[in-house]
Image (cartoon, rainbow, N blue to C red; front, side):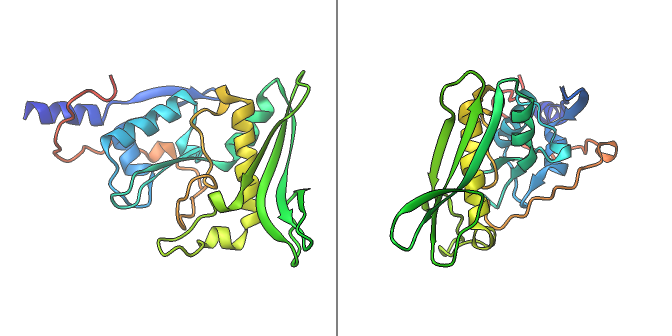
Length: 231
């Protein structure tokens, strides 16, 4: 009984930090009850990993800057909101611009790095590319990624709906996020976009959560952790 009470106290232990001057309060209970997408039962370890990602990278999950996605018994995935990458890059004093686009194979077999996402009917999309320019650097950070490595599929191997509808947009974003992460590792360490991680057909809700309506819900009786995950 004492161990269960200790586990319950830990479940409701609040961690507070600031994001852009605003206080964010998170606890394992808040994360379980409000911030898990996909309907799966997240483990204590996954909760702690998500909490630490938000705290150390100053992400506000209530503003949809970070998502914890869990399906059934599959490992949880942690995704950073799409606007976080570009906003953070522009705030960095060393950021000097970016370019991104797609790699297409033309009818004659030659490859072209093209700005944007235009792919003609007689061309084949094979990848994405991005450049991030850094002040006082002679050369930009440049990344090229293969479409076949990242294209999202269902369990039966069929391409999922998001990748089948806009593959050029998706692979361009993969390249851009990777270039930003390599250019500014302190700003983007541990942060991955939905396009980089196969989240199936999950459509991420971008509607902010009203924090005034968020309350800690007492957890059910549970087996205690062997160690203190928030220590």
